Length: 207
Image 1 (cartoon, rainbow, N blue to C red):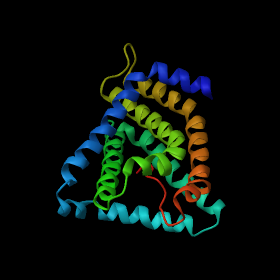
Image 2 (cartoon, helix red, strand yellow):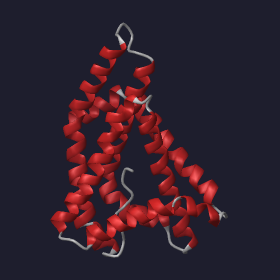
Image 3 (tube, rainbow, N blue to C red):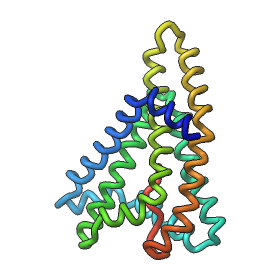
Image 4 (cartoon, rainbow, N blue to C red):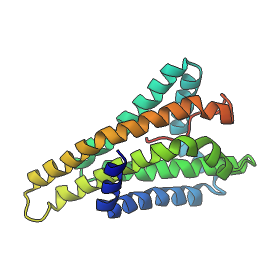
């Protein structure tokens, strides 16, 4: 698995950097839009409530069910980025920007309550995010790549053949993505509550 990750990173470094760029852009836009503008929070309340409801369901249930719910949510969201990338790469772009924005929202909310977002990120998100975020960015990079080649086929290839090659690469990475998400779900449910307490909802995962 390590060699497959290394090979993917070497061959798709530009797509991974592009995915990271969209994520950071979403984070910065949210910070700029929400800082000093409380009314803007109404635009994201529904999404935050969904995450809070999911968090309460996960932490109030048996650990195995919690792991299943986290894994199911993240697996569906992550692989949907790849499957629907044929729509000109828009789903991965929106997902990257949306997740980055959501991270910015959390940062602003915590700052307003006098809490440290960097500390929360290190203690509450990074332990599972060190596995979950790579899975998310790999999927997003694949999605951006697929969307690009829908418009601009690979050199010497038809559009259909380009898609087949891209989806073949995605299929090769699918087990790696799933294993990363599975390990991250276990850490998120079993370790995060010990660090932050059972009242804290899970870290921000893919939309």
